[in-house]
Length: 472
Image 1 (cartoon, one colour):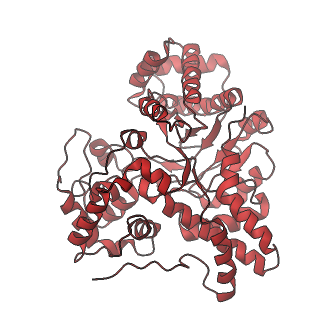
Image 2 (cartoon, one colour; image 1 turned 90 degrees about the vertical axis):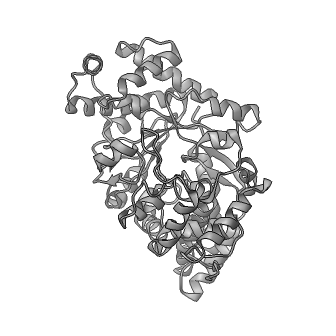
Image 3 (cartoon, one colour; image 1 turned 135 degrees about the horizontal axis):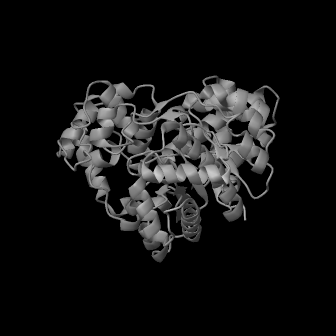
């Protein structure tokens, strides 16, 4: 059986000289607290604080990084126990799901998923067995026994992982009951919500009318007209602020943030209410609402996050049967310079406004994003995410943006994960990659080692704390 042994210098540069410097820089940051300012861990996991059910439903079923790789090789979501929208679950045996995953372990060679999973098994679960067809059952039993221990309850892991602050991502129509329970348990300042209004600002999707009903029920505002709709959104933002929220999150296809005149906005909203708004109108309204969200951020101080450039639910059959977030969201070209100009002209120098920009289109790093962040005080560049939160992806980010934007116009690292146990692995990888980049600058005599160590700590801790501080 193959033993799992993690090299202490994993993901550090290969050359002896640069690796020695990188090792010192990394060790100066490895014990810093984790600030998880942008993520998708379900607040109910922490509010319930129950044991994780089994290895398959902890490490495989909910992780679309894992399932999409298996699906790409012919495994079906049904075989992986992913629930269908109608509630049907075809494969209900978690051990069978785990065996299937382990039999395909070789598929993850060279991927960040392998790095995270190995870290979870070796560093979090304290096991030394490599996944494989011949080890699947033994590893399943070892993990299952570990999960039964009191030290592996979710709230206990908050301390074990040294997580100082964890932000979830929540629909604008979430009643935030789980966050209320966390406040009652004394964790309200440590686990906070993030306001995600996409289902309300994208007026063309089939569930929009129901979302409006929920918005009205929660706020008491009449969403039958545009002005009531805006008032209801402000009310929900206020509820999130009261629950400790630091930020909003916007997953638009494009970064367009161009205001409509009030009469046009009212007209398009009325058309959407009547079901007569066409695709161009819905896109225009979405861009208008992105601008309005920036205006509201100036008023209530919530940091605004935008991550455009993704064609979601690429396979309509998968979306019909299994819903969203199943690994079929594919990057497309993103454009920021013209798209954000109206917003940045209005708010980019306003001290009340903070905008964190993410992308999965690397072509815009040096051409658009670094120059925008390098001049507008409100703009920070979010860490590489999704397809780019990998060793080489993070290195390319540093190489492409630092010379124009510097280090201090970035957000520092945010992990953007649904997989709770992978949080320390993701932060660890980012700290190693940044240590390697900074070590190169030291050996090229572009930074002193003291400056590099200070910068590494800023990237890991101070910058995310500062970037996601509410602005008023």
